Image (tube, rainbow, N blue to C red; front, side, top):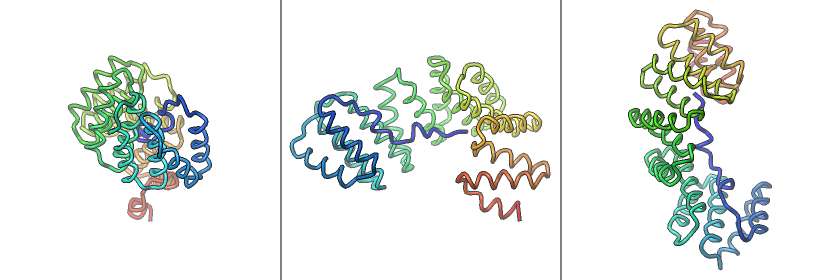
Length: 276
């Protein structure tokens, strides 16, 4: 499975709706792009002395962005809390603050708190599928599979071409152990999904289900197809290495592990036990 880094990435600047003070916000954004955080903070601090309502909210969200970039996540959370507590700010800025706080909570592994914000976002903007995708991901990570599958199922009916619902449904069905239904869901998704990369994720998840069911030939075909679409798919590399070790093809299995390690996967123990 390709985890939902889109939904777990802090993308504050894309959410902020600029109205007045555009030139000021552009200057701050330029400082952030150039990693001139001290200069940005100085400018923000000066403006916050007299800022009100939405202008204050936007400045505080910039501040939280800098704190997150500097790995001061708890400070960033506190700053976002200040935004959420402000009176009379536009819905777009409130949604930005909730989404940014959700992202921080999720990245910090505070899944229950992330879930609270994800639920708020899904209720606030029910026509935005990304917020419901976040719910399926969190419910799955928390092993609340019933709610995960319910949200996936209802949103697939509502957004039949949204790839990530199929992908999460398939992945967490595998985690739940319902491999046959995971294959069915992957095949259904492949009929609707247009994006080639997302097709690769579904094919890989289908391959894992086939592997667990003992359909080795279908499994290796799927792993190879997924890696042809996206050679850096670390899940496919790990799954295929498991297949190779099962078949006694140690050299090929180790090659996949080495490739996965080069892409950031922690496989030292496996390399030590399988490839000495």
